Length: 204
Image (tube, rainbow, N blue to C red; front, side):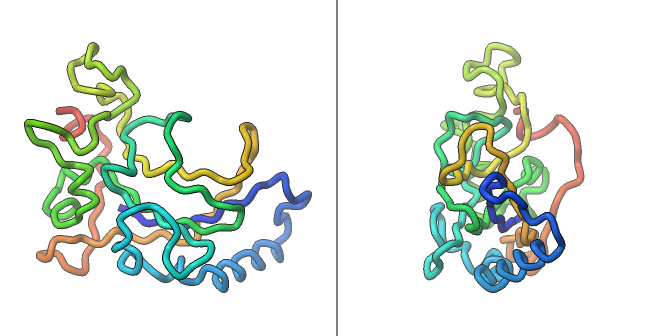
């Protein structure tokens, strides 16, 4: 899983949106000064914050964890309610999960409350019921809500104050940090997956 810190800025508010190298350097310098905690905090500094919102002690840094309450699986929708609303220039640390995490649950799910809540599944319920952009009633393949027609786990959405349909938004990725393994057997390590296949947990 990745953690990405992002800043949003509306293009049409400036006639010259950082066309020159100086503008880009100034932005990055400002990012490190005003939001240094964002780039250097890492998962541990904000992981205790289970709900999306502003990071305590900051004015323009928001945090969105990946849990069964904050992700949607395999689809986009304008009907989804934003988890946080930010202003131009704000920073957002967003946790993300791969849909292949449960291919190796020992390393990428076990001991991680957020991942465990997303991949939870017993006879009574699934942590995330809808998986994909298919019909809510499993009338096509019998795979459950969404029918597995769409695979990626998306965290969000995040709304930008004042942004209107048709606007072009600039989002800058300041840093990307691998999600640390929460299983004590693999302390200090991070794991990922390079699989690209239609199999496994998502299609049960």
